[in-house]
Image (cartoon, rainbow over all chains, first blue to last red; front, side, top):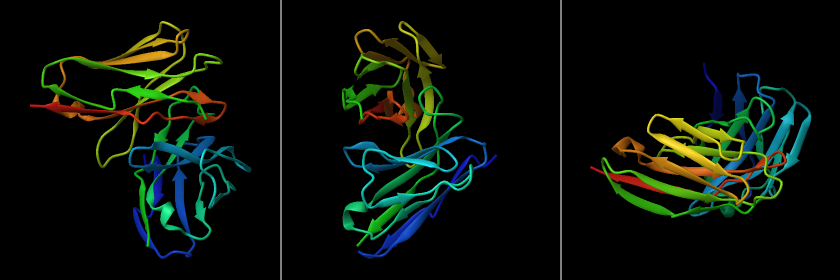
Length: 114
Length: 110
């Protein structure tokens, strides 16, 4: 059982480059989300989705774009990478909306923007 | 995004000792409280999702209590072991958003 799969695990970008972080889950979860983790700041929500075709902004959405064309996939796009986006990114999913259902996290993507 | 405070930020405990720490959250419009355990170089893993005032949950040597009226939850570790070393995160949901506290980092010394 794969759970939540994130790729790549590591990525180095130059300022201004764009890229997509991939997230897929095989648990038929309706809810998916992206977090970034920075030292001393805990996990901050970037974007989330309550089902296919529905996305919404979290706490720190600027510079990121998401789409949810299928239940399984929730890619995160960096439009024009900036050094401030250097972080560890986690994708997480839950069976239904995240209020009363526990989140399952992917293994994370460590991103460095030079 | 809700204001969530966890204290202390970090603590050291001797192997075999018990410890506890706090998560404070807004008590108005309470829906649920999540606890996660996050080991270094791994991903966060859910410990508990608590919804009822006075609720107490237990998983092995780890337990949690919830006071929704005053807006706090305690996490207890009984007889700490080195494998309990981790950062423990709490998160109350706000609509469809889960607001994580900065966590309490527990280091168990052998």
